[in-house]
Length: 433
Ligand SMILES: *Cc1c(COP(=O)(O)O)cnc(C)c1O
Image 1 (cartoon, protein in one colour):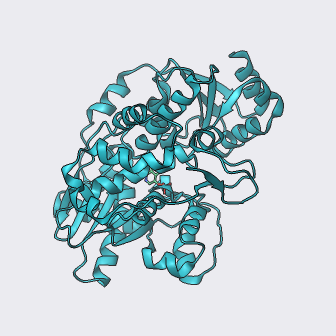
Image 2: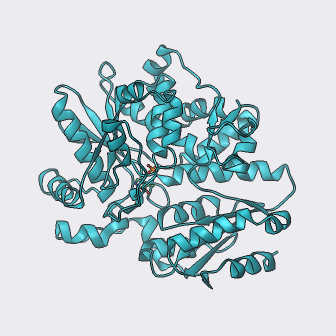
Image 3: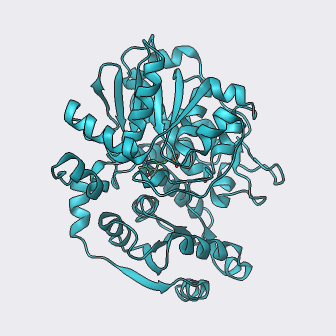
């Protein structure tokens, strides 16, 4: 399998090169040259197989010959090491809980898969790689956890000091070992600017083997297809495939779902559930794609004004908006509506949703109201405890701390403080060698 750049000004590469490069040199995103298609019968019989087996078979065409089959199977098994249950909320409405991994957000899947692929590639190169990431919260925790203990890979995470939640800061700073957390005296944009300057600094990249672990990396994007296969395995009514509503920000997760559908996975329709950041809903209704400044909301992991993976959705459908609309609908909701949904789900059905999942629920029920007889799934992308300060007052009770969070809250923080300037970061990175 080769990957071309969506800007078409860079050479096609294999999975290994795409993983190491992250973004293509022409600033495009890597996209697979073809989408593999499975036989219809396979999807009928899929629930007889083990989850690892199904996920392995889904990803295998994408890694091609860059990872031996037994090694890939091991990587997939280590990636899907937690349950992904489908739960009935009420008639016709189900939720797939993607948050039972170590950091309790769905990004664990992509981070675990990517870290292990990179670890495998680095072993063959006899070099040490430095993974440099900026995080506003969730991504950094998943990356820290995913890469912890991977030989040959050192991870440096920049986060805005005082601007991530208590739980998130613990998740970033308590690993130690090959994970180093830097509290930057600035905001998320400062962190991102420092990371971008590092990648653009030829002197630095000549001395350190630097790579990123951001969400456009194919090794983080592609394994998110697993969720949709796992949803289908648990879907009882195989004669009536579900619609799936996906809380969306950068559109990586839903784009992986659309890719799986192109491979033949029976999902009848996708719904992009957005908060007040509604570039994509507006695009689908007006035909105009107009990037915006991100608006801060309660579902903050979806506060994205120019979703980077949208170009991949266009690529899947050959940039034909008519085809996109046959597969995808998008809705946008305010924080007030999100709060209403959290309260309604809890008081009426005793289901505790986080703000992202609540947006997913709103979008699913709006779609179902317009399509009588349809049934569907909304994805729950984070555990509500990650947003306890917002959620607890709404439901008037405390949320029990799950084991993953309790253990991390007890650990000691190890972090470096740094002013928000690139020279400090560079000195530190080089001194570290
Ligand atoms: C990252 C994230 C999203 C958005 O996912 P995209 O792939 O960027 O669309 C939704 N919910 C949570 C909890 C997230 O962390």
